[in-house]
Amino acid sequence: MQDYIAEFIGTLILVALGTGVNANSSLKKTFTQESSNWLLISVGWALAVYVAVVIAAPYSGAHINPAVTFALAIAGKFSWNKVLLYVFAQILGAISGALITYIFFWNQFKLCKDKSLKLSCFATGPAIKDNLNNFFSEFFATFILVFSVLYLANASIASELDSSLKLGLGSLGALPVALIVMSIGISLGGTTGYAINPARDLGPRIIHSVLVNADSNWSYAWIPVFAPLGASALAALLSIIIGS
Image (cartoon, rainbow, N blue to C red):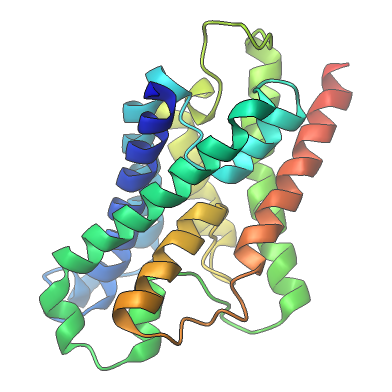
């Protein structure tokens, strides 16, 4: 059970710190709001990944992302028998992390009258609505993340399923993967908010829908779920070709 508990806690920390920097930077009556910018948010999410990987890596490999779990399974580096429970733990962790953010910024959310601003603290959305381009944005950004994990794992880590080494984002080390996420955010994140993680978007969107406002832009929600999963499949197939 420690694998699943680690994925739950790691994803909880990731989302709590990540949506926390969103809220801290966007809502009024915080000391950060007056000086917030995209760089702060990108660094905040990168550091959220860093902390989550540090916590989860020794026990589960620190997937903390269904796209990473899916890619590792396709590439033969992770047992398919564990995929559903890993993803369930990740989504439950994301829901719990978003709930913590909602409680933490309770007073600020009460003061905020801008519905779209409150939604942006939890879930991603397009700066310009264009489903095809938005899908491509999430697809390519996730591909960079997942291919980096798989390519470096191929280069330096034995891939046997019975290996005692846990594979995942932790395969890169906490700092390198945080820098990859920060690079994605700074360079590519402005068009859709760079979910690059189905659990990171779906869990907080559920909390927003239940506790904040039922209008959670569910018509867009399929993109940050299926684009990362599609990108992870492509990254896994390319890693197999390169490694063969």
